[in-house]
Image (cartoon, rainbow, N blue to C red; front, side, top):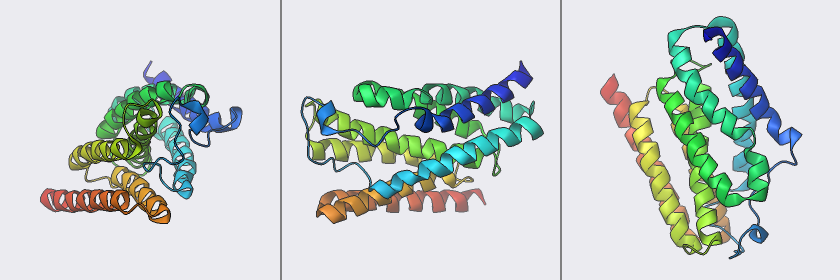
Length: 234
């Protein structure tokens, strides 16, 4: 079973990376998917920010392959693999669900992010385990915030800006806690910072200064906590 878990992790990483190719792909939620359509969701980062998925896919597959060959039964790797497999297993059909039912996709992201964070917190340090899993977990944290920042106004629960500020607050709270726990690995915080920078650029372009300012404050807070925690651990 110990050998099987490493192989399952690698297989799921491959399937997860192949999902955009094997499906029609995902280019974001559209107004027509919601009963309350909106011309713009302030929580959504600039389009170029989503290119990070390419790095995540490649790094996860490479890390899983390295672990399969070099750390097949290492206890620290095994502890990371179980929650990572759960996250990837949910992620494989995510694009298909997102194109059909955004609300269900948002809920799936909660579980994907939670299990990815659990894997990150258990991951051994190094470029093939904690670093790629941290990047994956950080971007999923941001993706979860974005999804709810879109779905809540789309369902008429909150206004777009109210949902955006709530989503950013939730993202920052989670990111600060995780970064405090694993400040030795900067990839989680880097993914969240990348998302926040994308939000800043998108809203500066749209002339939405309050959202840009809120995202900028989030970046400052996350960078500050990361630096202070790393100094404390030295």
